[in-house]
Figure (cartoon, rainbow over the protein chains, first blue to last red):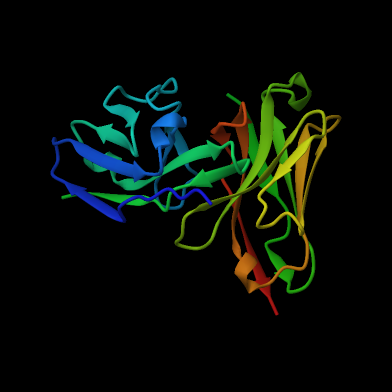
Length: 108
Length: 119
Protein backbone atom coordinates (compact mmCIF):
# COMPACT_ATOMS: atom_id res chain seq x y z
CA UNK A 1 0.00 0.00 0.00
CA UNK A 2 1.04 3.59 -0.54
CA UNK A 3 3.13 5.14 2.24
CA UNK A 4 3.87 8.78 3.03
CA UNK A 5 7.13 9.37 4.93
CA UNK A 6 7.81 12.49 6.97
CA UNK A 7 10.77 13.28 9.23
CA UNK A 8 9.70 13.08 12.87
CA UNK A 9 11.09 16.48 13.70
CA UNK A 10 12.43 19.67 12.17
CA UNK A 11 14.05 22.51 14.10
CA UNK A 12 14.58 26.06 12.90
CA UNK A 13 15.64 29.36 14.39
CA UNK A 14 13.15 32.22 14.53
CA UNK A 15 13.01 34.21 11.33
CA UNK A 16 14.48 31.40 9.28
CA UNK A 17 12.82 29.10 6.77
CA UNK A 18 11.50 25.65 7.67
CA UNK A 19 11.12 22.94 5.07
CA UNK A 20 9.13 19.82 5.88
CA UNK A 21 9.28 16.95 3.45
CA UNK A 22 6.75 14.27 2.59
CA UNK A 23 8.08 11.35 0.60
CA UNK A 24 6.14 8.86 -1.48
CA UNK A 25 6.54 6.84 -4.64
CA UNK A 26 5.90 9.23 -7.54
CA UNK A 27 4.10 11.57 -5.16
CA UNK A 28 4.48 14.27 -7.79
CA UNK A 29 1.64 12.62 -9.69
CA UNK A 30 -0.71 13.10 -6.74
CA UNK A 31 -2.22 16.15 -5.07
CA UNK A 32 -0.71 16.76 -1.65
CA UNK A 33 -2.37 18.62 1.18
CA UNK A 34 -0.86 19.89 4.44
CA UNK A 35 -2.31 20.40 7.91
CA UNK A 36 -1.03 22.20 10.97
CA UNK A 37 -2.00 20.85 14.37
CA UNK A 38 -1.21 22.64 17.60
CA UNK A 39 -1.43 20.82 20.94
CA UNK A 40 -4.99 20.13 22.02
CA UNK A 41 -6.43 21.49 18.79
CA UNK A 42 -7.91 20.07 15.62
CA UNK A 43 -5.85 20.05 12.43
CA UNK A 44 -6.02 23.13 10.22
CA UNK A 45 -5.57 23.00 6.45
CA UNK A 46 -2.63 25.23 5.47
CA UNK A 47 -1.92 24.11 1.90
CA UNK A 48 -4.08 22.15 -0.52
CA UNK A 49 -3.49 20.73 -3.98
CA UNK A 50 0.27 20.99 -3.62
CA UNK A 51 0.60 24.75 -3.40
CA UNK A 52 -2.72 26.55 -2.86
CA UNK A 53 -3.52 28.31 0.39
CA UNK A 54 -6.93 28.53 2.04
CA UNK A 55 -8.14 32.02 2.83
CA UNK A 56 -6.65 33.28 6.07
CA UNK A 57 -3.41 31.29 5.79
CA UNK A 58 -0.40 33.64 5.53
CA UNK A 59 1.65 33.58 2.36
CA UNK A 60 4.60 32.51 4.50
CA UNK A 61 3.20 29.00 3.96
CA UNK A 62 3.89 27.50 0.57
CA UNK A 63 4.09 24.05 -0.96
CA UNK A 64 5.72 22.23 -3.82
CA UNK A 65 5.53 18.72 -5.19
CA UNK A 66 7.68 16.90 -7.73
CA UNK A 67 9.16 13.46 -8.20
CA UNK A 68 9.11 11.52 -4.97
CA UNK A 69 8.96 14.45 -2.55
CA UNK A 70 6.46 17.10 -1.58
CA UNK A 71 7.62 19.98 0.58
CA UNK A 72 5.89 22.42 2.88
CA UNK A 73 7.91 25.60 3.27
CA UNK A 74 7.33 28.06 6.07
CA UNK A 75 9.26 31.29 5.77
CA UNK A 76 10.03 33.79 8.54
CA UNK A 77 9.19 31.19 11.16
CA UNK A 78 7.91 32.40 14.52
CA UNK A 79 7.02 30.78 17.81
CA UNK A 80 3.39 30.58 16.70
CA UNK A 81 4.36 28.13 13.97
CA UNK A 82 5.42 25.46 16.46
CA UNK A 83 3.11 22.55 15.75
CA UNK A 84 2.81 19.14 14.18
CA UNK A 85 2.46 19.15 10.42
CA UNK A 86 0.85 16.33 8.45
CA UNK A 87 0.84 15.71 4.72
CA UNK A 88 -2.11 13.91 3.11
CA UNK A 89 -3.07 12.47 -0.25
CA UNK A 90 -5.94 10.58 -1.74
CA UNK A 91 -4.57 7.43 -3.35
CA UNK A 92 -6.76 6.61 -6.32
CA UNK A 93 -5.30 3.11 -6.73
CA UNK A 94 -6.43 1.98 -3.29
CA UNK A 95 -9.24 4.53 -2.92
CA UNK A 96 -7.83 5.53 0.44
CA UNK A 97 -7.12 8.82 2.16
CA UNK A 98 -3.61 8.61 3.57
CA UNK A 99 -1.74 10.78 6.05
CA UNK A 100 1.95 11.04 6.69
CA UNK A 101 3.18 10.26 10.17
CA UNK A 102 3.60 13.93 11.02
CA UNK A 103 6.54 16.24 11.67
CA UNK A 104 7.01 18.22 14.84
CA UNK A 105 8.30 21.69 14.06
CA UNK A 106 10.34 23.23 16.86
CA UNK A 107 11.30 26.88 16.83
CA UNK A 108 14.58 27.20 18.66
CA UNK B 1 -16.92 28.13 6.46
CA UNK B 2 -19.07 25.62 8.31
CA UNK B 3 -18.88 24.59 11.92
CA UNK B 4 -18.79 20.95 12.92
CA UNK B 5 -19.39 19.57 16.40
CA UNK B 6 -18.88 16.00 17.54
CA UNK B 7 -21.05 14.48 20.24
CA UNK B 8 -21.36 11.11 21.90
CA UNK B 9 -20.18 9.03 24.84
CA UNK B 10 -16.63 9.54 26.01
CA UNK B 11 -16.44 6.02 27.43
CA UNK B 12 -17.32 2.81 25.62
CA UNK B 13 -17.01 -0.70 26.99
CA UNK B 14 -14.85 -3.13 25.06
CA UNK B 15 -16.71 -5.29 22.54
CA UNK B 16 -19.51 -2.71 22.34
CA UNK B 17 -20.29 -0.24 19.56
CA UNK B 18 -18.93 3.29 19.53
CA UNK B 19 -21.45 5.84 18.25
CA UNK B 20 -20.73 9.47 17.47
CA UNK B 21 -22.68 12.21 15.75
CA UNK B 22 -21.41 15.30 13.98
CA UNK B 23 -23.73 18.30 13.79
CA UNK B 24 -23.05 20.69 10.94
CA UNK B 25 -24.00 24.37 11.09
CA UNK B 26 -23.49 27.19 8.65
CA UNK B 27 -24.25 25.09 5.62
CA UNK B 28 -26.57 22.31 4.57
CA UNK B 29 -25.19 18.82 4.08
CA UNK B 30 -27.79 18.33 1.35
CA UNK B 31 -26.25 21.12 -0.74
CA UNK B 32 -23.89 18.48 -2.05
CA UNK B 33 -20.34 18.74 -3.24
CA UNK B 34 -18.73 17.68 0.01
CA UNK B 35 -17.77 14.41 1.64
CA UNK B 36 -18.62 14.31 5.34
CA UNK B 37 -15.79 12.54 7.08
CA UNK B 38 -14.48 10.92 10.20
CA UNK B 39 -10.79 10.94 11.12
CA UNK B 40 -9.26 9.63 14.33
CA UNK B 41 -6.03 10.22 16.16
CA UNK B 42 -4.63 7.81 18.72
CA UNK B 43 -3.15 9.63 21.71
CA UNK B 44 0.11 11.23 20.72
CA UNK B 45 0.00 9.68 17.26
CA UNK B 46 -0.85 10.57 13.69
CA UNK B 47 -4.12 10.92 11.84
CA UNK B 48 -6.12 8.01 10.46
CA UNK B 49 -8.96 8.42 7.97
CA UNK B 50 -11.99 6.31 8.87
CA UNK B 51 -14.34 7.10 6.01
CA UNK B 52 -16.82 9.52 4.56
CA UNK B 53 -20.38 9.83 3.37
CA UNK B 54 -21.85 11.90 0.56
CA UNK B 55 -25.21 13.59 0.96
CA UNK B 56 -26.62 10.95 -1.39
CA UNK B 57 -25.67 8.40 1.27
CA UNK B 58 -22.81 6.89 -0.78
CA UNK B 59 -20.09 5.82 1.61
CA UNK B 60 -16.35 5.20 1.37
CA UNK B 61 -14.40 3.47 4.12
CA UNK B 62 -10.82 2.79 5.11
CA UNK B 63 -10.33 -0.84 4.16
CA UNK B 64 -8.56 -1.49 7.47
CA UNK B 65 -11.75 -0.63 9.36
CA UNK B 66 -14.39 -1.39 6.78
CA UNK B 67 -15.76 -4.52 8.46
CA UNK B 68 -16.57 -2.57 11.64
CA UNK B 69 -17.54 0.89 10.38
CA UNK B 70 -20.83 2.44 9.34
CA UNK B 71 -21.15 6.11 8.46
CA UNK B 72 -24.59 7.52 7.81
CA UNK B 73 -26.14 10.90 7.10
CA UNK B 74 -29.38 12.54 8.22
CA UNK B 75 -29.93 15.57 6.02
CA UNK B 76 -33.11 16.54 7.90
CA UNK B 77 -31.03 17.10 11.04
CA UNK B 78 -27.92 18.25 9.17
CA UNK B 79 -25.96 15.54 10.93
CA UNK B 80 -23.83 12.57 10.04
CA UNK B 81 -22.85 9.70 12.27
CA UNK B 82 -20.19 7.09 12.92
CA UNK B 83 -20.67 3.62 14.32
CA UNK B 84 -17.64 1.46 15.07
CA UNK B 85 -18.43 -2.02 16.29
CA UNK B 86 -16.54 -4.51 18.44
CA UNK B 87 -14.24 -1.89 19.90
CA UNK B 88 -11.06 -2.69 21.80
CA UNK B 89 -8.57 -0.57 23.73
CA UNK B 90 -6.81 0.01 20.40
CA UNK B 91 -9.80 2.11 19.33
CA UNK B 92 -9.20 4.67 22.09
CA UNK B 93 -8.63 7.90 20.19
CA UNK B 94 -9.71 11.43 19.51
CA UNK B 95 -12.37 11.33 16.83
CA UNK B 96 -12.77 14.28 14.49
CA UNK B 97 -15.49 14.97 12.00
CA UNK B 98 -14.46 17.00 8.99
CA UNK B 99 -15.70 18.30 5.67
CA UNK B 100 -14.00 16.73 2.68
CA UNK B 101 -13.62 18.56 -0.59
CA UNK B 102 -13.85 16.43 -3.75
CA UNK B 103 -12.65 13.36 -1.88
CA UNK B 104 -9.30 15.13 -1.74
CA UNK B 105 -8.71 17.22 1.39
CA UNK B 106 -10.47 18.41 4.54
CA UNK B 107 -11.12 22.10 4.84
CA UNK B 108 -13.13 22.31 8.07
CA UNK B 109 -12.83 20.20 11.20
CA UNK B 110 -14.69 19.75 14.45
CA UNK B 111 -12.80 20.23 17.69
CA UNK B 112 -12.62 16.49 18.25
CA UNK B 113 -13.90 14.23 21.00
CA UNK B 114 -11.91 11.73 23.03
CA UNK B 115 -13.39 8.26 23.22
CA UNK B 116 -11.85 5.83 25.68
CA UNK B 117 -12.53 2.11 25.48
CA UNK B 118 -12.51 0.39 28.85
CA UNK B 119 -12.79 -3.20 29.92
